[in-house]
Length: 353
Image 1: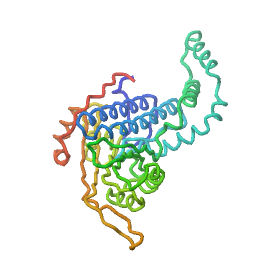
Image 2: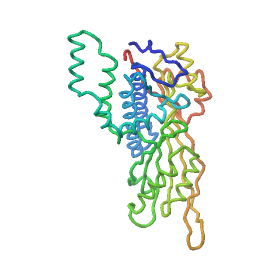
Image 3: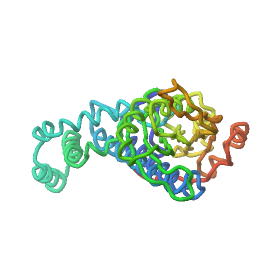
Image 4: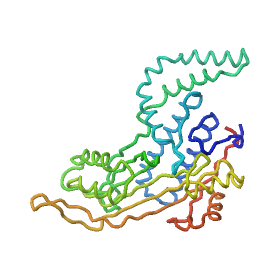
C-alpha cells in the first residue's frame, strides 16, 4: 500500500492497521537514528554522554518494535500513542509489555507449534492459493513476540546507567546517567550527573547514589530542585554538573496538540505542502552547574552542599530541509528562540509499507 493511502484520523490515539504500525515504527526508528547521528556530529553531547544516550534510545526502539510485533495482527487491542506534546507511545504501553512478558510461558503453552504454523501457511498459500487468515497471522506474530522479545530490554519507567570515571578534560571524577519515562508528559528523558566523592572507594557510595536517583530524580521537575534534592540526600557525594535531555515531542502526522510546530506540520500536510511522512524532532537540554559550596547543619553534623547557578535552557530542533523551510516561513519566532539554528536530518522515504 502506498503511504499516501494511509488515512490517519487526527483525533485518534490508536494505531489500528498493519500500515499504521509499520509506518509509525519506520518513522520513529528513522528519526531517532538521524537524531543520534546529528547530535554526535554537532557535539550537542560529549563522546561519553553519546555512548549512554544511544543505549537508552536503543531500548526505546527495541520496545516500540516489540509493540509493533505484538499489535500488528491483533484485532482486539491497539497501541496507543500520546498525542499531546509527545508523539511517543503512551507510558502504559511499556508497562503492558513488561507485565505481559512476565507471563510468556503461559502464553506460549497456548499457541500452536512453530513448525505446525509454517506447514499451515505453506498449505494455504501454495496448495489452496488463498490468503492466510488474520487469526493465523496473529498466532504467528504472537509466537514470534513471546519467543524473541526479552523483558530485560523493555524501556522501563526508570533505567539506571552505571557509574564511570570521566576523561581527564572533565573536572569531576565520576559521571553517572539515568533515564526515565515521565508519565505526565509521556516522553523519555535522559540525565547525566558529574560528581566527586569524599574519601573511600566509589563502591562505598554506589548503592546510595542509585537509590537516591531512583527515588528523587525519576520524573520531570525544575532541574535546580532535582539537583538540590540529590545533593541533600547524598552525604560525601558532591554533584557538580547535572544535564537533562528532554527527548521530544516528535512532531508528526500522529500527533495532535497546541504545539506551534506540530500545528505547522499538520497544517502543511493537510494543504499537501509537505508529505504525510514529514516530521520534526524537538529536543530540550537543561543544565545546571555548582557555582560554590556551603555548609549546613549543626556544629557536629555539618553537610557540604552545592550552591547551584541558574539553569541553562537550550531548545533545539532537528528536521528535514523542507520542514525547516516551512517552520521558518510559518513560525519564525519559534526558530529565533532556539539555542542554535535547526539541524538538518535526511528525509524519511517510504514508497510502500
